[in-house]
Length: 385
Ligand code: XIL
Image (cartoon, rainbow, N blue to C red):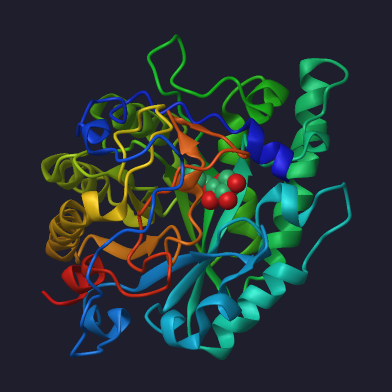
């Protein structure tokens, strides 16, 4: 799994390369781990849980690690922190490469534990993810024979994977990211991400229709999502709209669009978030915020680490503004999920200069609890509105 993670190169040239904040000017040292941040601990006199504050708005979710990368979120954070959330999603353990690493051999334990925790604690579970170009084993993509033969063989593997995974959790996973990140980041001949095992094995985008058909058949009552990043970028959003229309995805069971929401301190604008929500709502689709976190760097490749104190105020204000917008859209949004719980474990520590660097760390502060698992001011700014 790690080697696949290493190959992830999410080139977020859209939007994320917009220079947003001259963080480098704030750098105190050239090492990747800043010295201790001096931010006064938050005093919480209310102790209301996030999920209770958002009753009447939308469920609040978090991505969790189930004994992956040395972290088990449930034991690490305990029921106290976890009880802020009434929904969870697997950060990795339901991905194809983890759950079916070799053909026909399923690693159910982590996902089973995750679902059991949710059931025991009255949480809903988002399913992530069925069809993605990344963290998917090569065996799923047939490399031999004619294009038609490759498509047929790959289609059969997709179907058996979706039947098994969606079928196993059909009573407990209420929605699935059926297809993730299938759209191109640039106008380069095709609206689709053509450098993808799914696209090349099929030879066209019909794998997306198959994925929705198979998921719909395996769990007819589950909500089915197309999920992507930089959806707020108008050109990418237009490509997603075109895909939904060209492939007639609603007739294949598409219920909604997941906006990953890997955002930064100043990108995207609240107006662009609003326009995006409206665009999909007006198409008769549900909208979910599926992977919200706030990159405190300007996505530069610099390894200069900044201390939390340099960005804490901006992060607090940013979270307040984003959640105000989301609350204003509560009738159009059915769930908001953060991509993690606390800053001690965030993939953004490895997202440097727009690509995932497994062996390199630059401390980031994207979540609502800090690296010591304490509430941040951002937590209060989200909860106390
Ligand atoms: C990330 C995880 O957080 C990392 O632990 C893993 O190494 C790579 O994937 N978009 C997605 C998520 O849909 O699955 C990705 O999660 C982040 C980007």
